[in-house]
Image 1 (tube, one colour):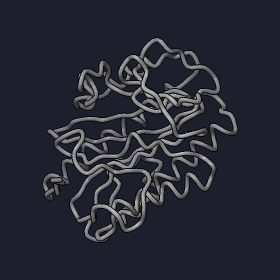
Image 2: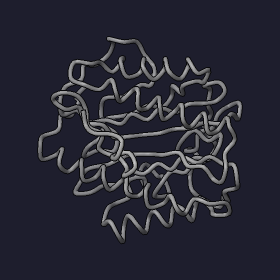
Image 3: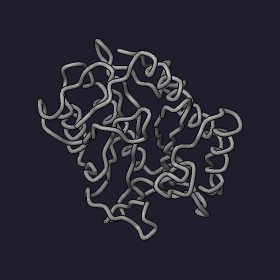
Image 4: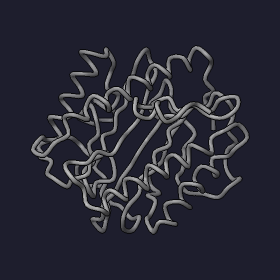
Length: 260
């Protein structure tokens, strides 16, 4: 397995791509409301990425994916295709953004609430974000991929939720998906040892019910088999000399978080 280690020049480009991806999520926030369709959200994001930011929406035509963003609603786990689905009060929504700038990718996702969510939905989203953050907290030179997965799995299952195992984080850089795969479950001390310059996503998908999923006939949209709610958060992370740096922090997060 060949894992790309980024040079200082590549890291600088990754920082720019990450910041731009985060800005799309910041921009779309005010448009999330009852009555809007996921297709309209896709159009708004596409126009912002292409016309304002001057970036390429990475999902568009990637292995045949037809849209510029992924929109996964309620029991949809990931890779939801934007379309005519009209959002309603109480829905939860994951928007997954990946941009390409100067040949490098920035990848991030966030949960949004449409109106006031249920107590379960709010708690699921909160626990999933905590799981992502506890996974990211393990990232440092000398740590292992198993450390990340174990931290996420322990938190999620300790709250009586389940971790989706069929989809995982991934290395990222010039390519949308590079090595290594970042599993969101595992055993501490196992797997590849992290070294400075590695860049990858941490993006746990957490179900309120059982972990089992199925792929819809569109070939992309993944849903929970038991139709329980699902949530996901994602950041792109760089392994630094003494810890890690999150490359896709949004403005509200930068006020709370600094690189370690």
